[in-house]
Each structure stands twice: as structure tokens, then as C-alpha cells.
Amino acid sequence: MAHRDFSVRLLQRVAPLGAVSFAFYVVAGPLQLGQRALFPDFSGSGLAFIVRLVGAVAAVALTVWLLERHICPPLTAALRR
Image (cartoon, rainbow, N blue to C red; front, side, top):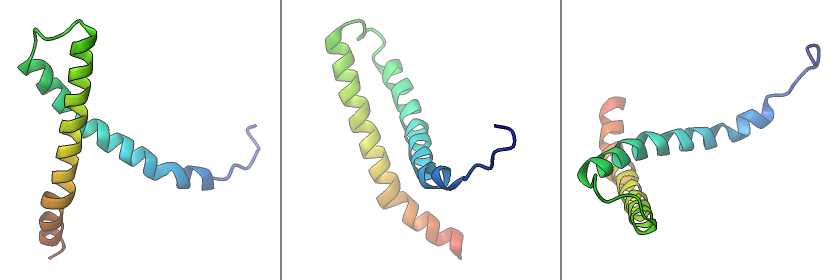
């Protein structure tokens, strides 16, 4: 396999998925840590897992929406000047 010529076309096509995945973890990580800090005693049951999961998904969706729609456009316009 050392002398085989590999194409990077497949990697170029899936690269945006990696960027989206990384962005999701960058946004979701601090939110989940904050959620654990706010509700440290609410854990250990199936209900707690589901509530935290729904809360994390909602918080990430709201944060990403705010970043994409309200924070990035003015910031991008200011940086392009």
C-alpha cells in the first residue's frame, strides 16, 4: 500500500461534515458543562438523562441559531471592511 496512489476527492467531499461536527462540539461542550454546574444533583436516572438531553439539544440549537443569524453577519461585515 505504500506505493499506491490515493485520491483525496472523497476526503474533500466529506470535509464540511467534519467542520460541522467540530463546531457542534465546540458549542455543545461548554453548554453541557454549564448544565452540569447548574443542576449537579439532578442526575443518575433515565428521566434526568432525557431532560438533560432535551435541554442540551435545545440550548445548542438556540445558540447556533443566534450565532448564525444575529452574531456572525455583523461580525463578518466588520471584519471584511
